[in-house]
Length: 306
Image (cartoon, rainbow, N blue to C red):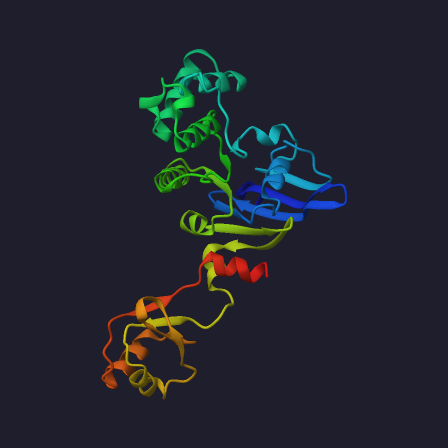
């Protein structure tokens, strides 16, 4: 892949606190157009790594490139970020908080007003823009933080735990906003999170971090497809003896106990659903449902960090 197609790359990135390596020899590659999930439990080193990438703290060794740029100042020109929980002046309106941020970004006058209006509309806060930020819900403050990060039209957006602490509605709002920014605004997005189900819904590529080290990286599809146990099928039939008789001639197939909603689980190495269905029909086994169970990121995470 050409350098211009890499939005963010680290090579050997290391950050130490005394003898402890919070980030160790980290090699991460985020492609232009990715929604990249930076995964790991609390304390894995995600926020420290992001701070190093964004120049908020120094790193002891390694290299950081953002759109091919290595200069610590120049590489941030196309980046917007929220690291940890965004904070605002509670007595100021949402719009005035953004106006202050725009001034720091050297935006002023009509240009600043137009840009502030654009980002407020983009995150759905125009109707509450005049209200004090202290009256905002946690989800609204998170969206205001994303609006602030969008000032100046960045090409790379870095969000550290953007749904942490939100209720289901707030999580949904932030998730849909992230999807829209990637799809409609063509922004490359890096999201750090320990919420694996959330990341699986919105990210196309992930890196899994543990103890400051990258344990796995790749597309969500490839990580879910790689390795693991034979696929399991939940067969909605209560008659275990009839199932055993029907499956006796199928190579490698075995029953694996009870599954969800009283279904019987069948380990099926080839996952030949048409063949399985035909065998059950020939044996007159009543079928309520045949549900293939897919691996999820939680299983992958537990395997690579075991």
